[in-house]
Length: 277
Image (cartoon, rainbow, N blue to C red; front, side):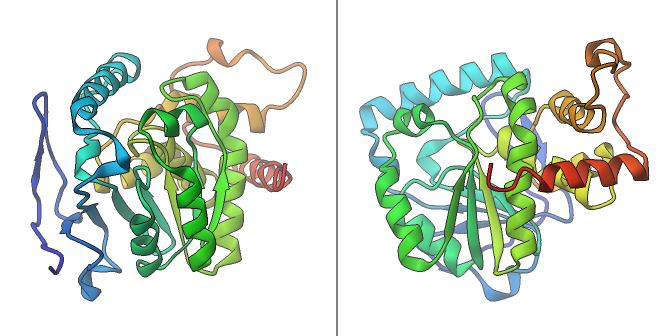
């Protein structure tokens, strides 16, 4: 079945309603087919999954409810993750895709068909185990189809962990984009916190955008609530890596929403130095 362009679709859950906007196209994908003419557009896609991640139906609902309760409490936003709908993702740019966790080998084959050559996973082992994902089969599928799989784990719902891991995660993302063999798929569990934060930080540091522009560019295509303070904090850590620097917590809320050219160059150099670490 070909992808269905629904225009500006209202995305609903029990607790919120959010419009995707005119630029976003949502695609409901069954199996592994996506319309060719939609591949270059900003698209949010759900890959249907009749047996997601091997999670038994009796436990799936309680796991999702517990996860979404924790996410709303810790991240203070209304977004939800629906594991039973399968992997979902959004094409942010020609070389960058952000989404939720692959749940089965077929998801890797689908991403390969979408031009993905690299996967950057931000999950910890316990995140993968929580959903009963067979990670070995995911890794094997990546190897089979020539997708380079990378891991930069950060603790879910933890802004300090995200802040500390952002430089290394962005380093891996920047390397993959620079390598240029295909799109990079960045994912966490739900694709609503860690993964979009890494993508936004990359756009902020490497694409000559300020933080608000990068944040709005991504969230206008993929409604989500990544922690902006974590990104600002990581920017501060890279730009002000000196023993006499003032504490980040003492700075105003707008601090490091933008950076000077010399700061951006310094950040780029320091992030690139983290390759392979």
